[in-house]
Image (cartoon, rainbow, N blue to C red; front, side, top):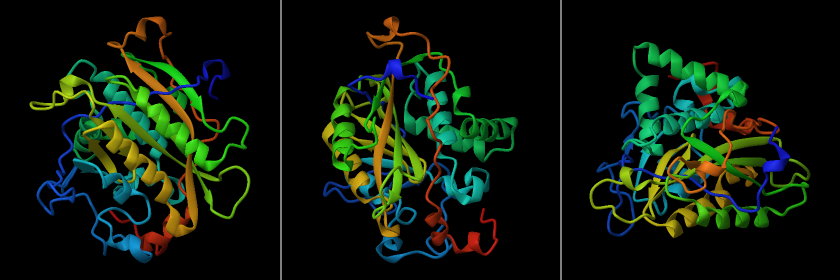
Amino acid sequence: MFPEHRFANRSSIATPDQSAITHRSATGSSQTGAGKVDAKADQTLSREKRGAVLGACAKSDFRECRGGSALEGNASSHVLFDQFDRKETRGDEGRGTCEGIAREAIRRIDRAYGTTTQGLSSAVSSMVTDMDGKTAARDDTYGRIERYQHNPGTLGLSNYRQSSILNLNPDGTSSRVDRINGLIDSTSDIPLGGLAYIRVGIQSADQMGPETSGHVLLVQHLPRDTQGDGYASPDRYQVFDPNNGVFTYDSLDQMQTSLRSYMDSAYNEDGDIAAPNIVLNFVPASSRDYGSLPPTTTVPAPPINQLEPPELLQHFGHFAAGGSGM
């Protein structure tokens, strides 16, 4: 459970780095084939291989109806990643392992503190390299993801400390608009190197009461030493969505606009809506607040570890038919 005494009125979000590869043209649209890269180039399934699709979502570069196009809208680059490209991370009943994947990304950033790979895109790229390798690192990576998925509290941090928890819906009556606004406002306070874990609730648009499904996003404010030559601005951010990948933004405003667009559009075609519930904020050892915070020996588990909506299976005809995919 999240400890009540550590709830705060503000939140902070994490840092993006320079290893995201898909670059955008001067007009703002993606350069087809010029930079859009999988964390592993041969991993992304084609539109045909993904099985049945619904409506306009089939036109997206990303998996249907999961918000990837919204996140790409203002991004300067991105690294593709989809938890459903690998059978090991599709999870129970094909409903994903986003909790475990997000926590593995946090672990890698924490362990890489002080290096030029202390960013979400580097963390995800190294995760994919290990996933697709033939070494013991492959089994170790999948083992940690499974453990964090089923027992999230087993993750502890060495170089980051939890600075606050923002509960956007403490009594279950906050409006979706207020929750989204609260999340967006909180991102303005993310320090350099800071990370935010965002727990998203998902439910049918015509349903009342608590959400029945969920998802996890990460946001990072890139440390200066991960931004590469020519990126002196401290205002670059990354968002990691285990359904779509890591997206890099060259300003706070661009990141906030894309994050809001994601909340407004993800899961809509299935008749669902998404809204943030909880934000965990983490600061690196370089932060001025770090020394006043207790060590984070356990990253709090969500009150309920909700999985992706079951409607996901509509988009994967080969799953429904009993195929294993990749």
